[in-house]
Length: 264
Image (tube, rainbow, N blue to C red; front, side, top):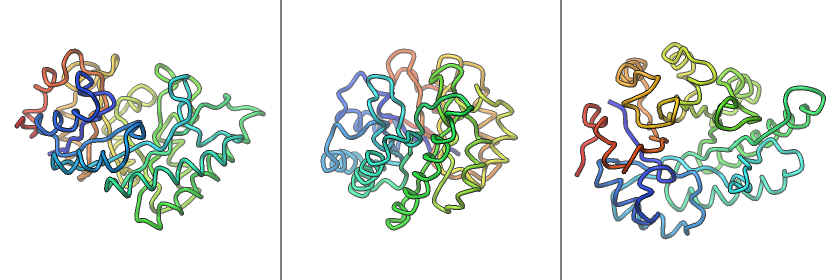
């Protein structure tokens, strides 16, 4: 049975951020994740987690100017100093809140061609450095392919094939694949076979249903089938619910009852 975590950046937005922790716990979640946790202090975040018996299972590193369209800085040649500072900030935050996984958001880059090489080199250099920093604290560094067709045109890392090739080159044991089913469906499809092929590299899973990035009960993907396949493959990690609820978050959680998500 999958272990579901609520993404507090996208879900329970009908509540102020500090109140989303209690709302998630009351809805039956034992874990949460956050794209942009740094607006609140790590100490406060830890208190909200502890008060609701929740585990923070994933955070993003600071990802540049998010409000103005940046989606990470890992691949950006002119931002290496900022990248290293951001990883340090993420490590400190993760250790305080007890989170073992940090997503190094790739960033937007030119299409393959003459100007691409510096971005390729920077991405690899930054990941290798960051993985070594995280290993000191027994933390895992996640990389996530994000679709460039619909959500983030120009995203540097777009497919599991690309991600796994880089992971194999770098050979860092704590560098892991963040398998977002929504993005993989849009870019690559063949979800069950691809998940099985990627299993040894996967450190975290996220779900949403195309085409509108909604609950896993309606859309292109047969999630009940996929959840069974995921269990059969032997995946026992967290599954982050990173979707935009159609209406109120709690009202849209009916899908979870069949998969062990029981409201308190």
